[in-house]
Each structure stands twice: as C-alpha cells, then as structure tokens.
Length: 173
Length: 421
Image (cartoon, rainbow over the protein chains, first blue to last red):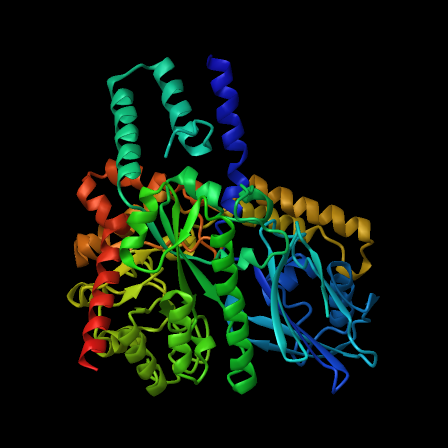
C-alpha cells in the first residue's frame, strides 16, 4: 500500500517542473497574411516577442548582440532570423513554398512586451487555389507556445491557431 | 461531480493525506481530510462560474475537439468539456478575442469577421456537444443548464476593437449571444485606453465613441468589462454606466503591484457601484515573481561557456538548447499558488466586501498556476477558501452568486431603458 502511494506521489511531483514553467505569461505570436488577386501580391507579417527571438537565436532573451532595428544591428541578425524561421515557419501557395526574403522589420512596445515585426512579400501571379501555413515558431522553446494566424484572402478573413501539436494547416479556395 | 477518483489533484490530496496518516495518524490529518471532503461537497453544491477563458483560440486550432480531454502539458490547453466536468466548473464565459490591429475601415472589417468566426466557433461547439453543454444567454440559464447535468457556456468579447466605428455592431453581437464586452485589450483602441499601451493614454479613459458603446451595452443588457483598461477607463465606466460593471479578470494592486490590478480605491468604488471583480489566475498578477538565483547563476555559467552562435553547427545548437531546457527543469520558477489567489480574495473581501469578488481564471489566455493549472483543478480554490474559514454562503457568492447578481441587474437596467423608449 505504502509503495503504491509513494509511486503515485512521485508521478504527481514529476509533473511539477512543467506546471511551473507554464505559469509564465501566455506564449503567443501573430502572423498576418494578406492577398488580393487584383494586386497579385501576398504580404506576410510576423509579430514576434523580441525576448523569444533572442532566446531562440542567441540563447538569451535580453541579449543586445543582434540589436534588431537598432543602428548597430548585427550583420548576421537577418540571416540568423531567416535560418530559424525557415526551420519552423513556411507559407505554401498552390503547393509551392514561398521563399522568405525580409522586406523590412520594426519594433513596437517596450520592455518584455517589445515585439519584432518582420515583413515579407511574395508575388503571386497565378490565381490562389491553396494556402498552406506552418507556424511552429518557438515551440522548440516553450511547450505551450501558440501561434495565431490571420489570413485575409480576397476580402475574406480566417483565423487559425497553430502549435507544436498542430503546426501546419492548408486552406483551399 | 467528484466521483472521478483518478483526478490528479484530488488524488494528490488523498495520497498526501493517506501517506501522512500511515506515518503519523494524527488528529490533525483527520481534520484535514474532513476539511477537503467538506470543501468538495460545497464545491459540488454551489454554482461555479468562471468569467474569462480564451478557449475560442483553441477552437480555431485545426482538429481541436472540445469534447475530448486534452493533456495540458502537451500544448498548454487549459479547458475542454471533460475537464470542466472533472473540476466541477458549471459555467464559463468563452471570450472571443481579436488582437488589436490597424484602426481603419479595413482593420475594423477584418476584426469583425474574425470576431464573428470566433463566436460562431463557440455556438457550433455548443450545438455539436448539446448532450454535455448548453449555450447560456441569461443569468438563470446557468442554474437551469447545471440542473440538467450540463455545463453552461456564455459568450463574451475581449477587446471592443471588432465594434469598429459602427455602433450597430453592438446589437449584432448581442443577438449572437454576447453578454459582456471587455472595452479594450493590450493596446488603445477607438473605445478606450489600455492599461498596458506603451504609448500611454490616448483618450484620457473612455473615448466619446466608447461612451456611446457603453450606453448601447446598457440598453441591450451587455455587461461592461473594464479589465485591461487603464485606471481612467474604470472611473469613466463607473460614471457612464447605468448598470453595475465588472472586471472579468483582474486582481488587487495592494497585494500585487501591477497596472492590470485594481487599487483599493477602485475596489471600494466597485462595491459602491454594485459591480464585481473576478480574480484571475495569472501568475504575474497574483504575486511578484521571486528571484531564482540558482537558475540565474547556472544559466550565466552556461552562457559564458558558449562559443559564438554563428560558429555553431546545427547539432551544437540543438545540444545547447537541451542544456538550457535542462536548467529550466532543474530550477523552475517559483510558482504562483492557490494561496496567492486566496490572499487576493481575502484583501478584496476586506476592502470591498464579500459581494464584490468572483473568479475569472483566464485559462487559455495565460491563466493557470500551481494547483489551479487547468479547469480540472478549480476545486482547489474552494478547498483553500474553506481552509481560511469562508462559509458555504460566502463561497457561493464568490463562485458565481455575485456575478449572476450583477448580470441580473444589468438586464433589469436594460429592461428599464427599453421600456422608457
């Protein structure tokens, strides 16, 4: 009796580190994808917490090393960011992966709430029949990371939540 | 509601009790068992209402089924219908949340479309699971649905952004089942100022259009929610609203200094207004995070031993990530606990009175602490309240009675306004 109960207690205690880690604020990122067939241009905007970006790229949430959007931004900042995003994020139009080229970036907010916005553009000449999005950013850091995707395609809006378990989804038109 | 003996938290209490009993067998253990049992019985009898969950965000996750039990350690999911039943949570407000974006016609149109998608997700979830939950529109629905052995699902909107600049949207949302609207979220919008906008105040509280929205909410019978608003939003809402207001997920600033929490003066005014503050399970709002020097030292030492990131191979990066994760597990952040929750409740009761406090966990929106990690563990709040000497009558008020009272008053005011034409 005693040993069975002891094992049960150990199992409960084993869950403690995960429970403690998730008492952090909500782990969230936002991705907005916009496309109109009239303009034949797709814009992809990622809003990422800067602390998460730094943690993912240089293992330190408060690192000044990459200095995104600062006059002293590191020459390797964009490449490190792209290497990371290419591992955890993609957009496919009509089944073909969009090549991610950073058009511009900006910072908003302050302190722990500072967000890094990353803008991409993609020329989509052919009519859009399917859009597949993978967004598993920061799921390598946090088990409870969730990534909201807003897709605005030819005037119709749709929202999705992607995470470690369900990292990709395809929309068809 | 607590016949499921496999429930982990209840099991923990039971095991802990039995283990200690085996070793000591003291009278105090027997008293503890009696206390837990009494608390669970109270929890079973009273109506339990959680006024804030961002679970609609889960509903837009492809393949997520509210009727299935999910592992909270897998993706952080905190609410589904089986876990509501396990925790004895009778009613919940699911908040349709749309992140603040550009405040122009295009932005407003999109926000409305996204909000309606969220509301439709909630409604269709209740229709799909009509055998275990019911859509609730009026205060008494919670009691009626609970009596049927089902969970009551109410709808709120978190962030007034999807109202855009069109006042008629308020009535459209009401018709869809929305019964509270949080005026603003983490950034200022056209209705009100946020407590956390880095640019500070824009309207000095509630804007002129926001005042019209409050008036329309009063007319329709939608509760005015001031959580996320800055202090001026609270004072303006008290002044403008003809009906009592709510803070669907906010805590006491005197206990934990945070701009999202409410000062004692605000709590007293809330009492005068007849409204209610719903305690939230967000760790940073419950306690100031204590230092974690062992982890800090270990992390600093690991960083000092790193070679430049740009020179690392992918394998080295992966190994380093695992080393950091191992440190996080070895030195977890000291958690917020149910004792912190009860500390806030004690304070609000002292300052505002027992009639002005409730529960709004903010599950799936950042809420979830040790002991109240997800919907299946909410009974631990009741156990702590019983431990602190709260009576069943008081617990009934905290867990739902107060909120339902305000909800009824909001509807009564709406009826008067509509009758007056």
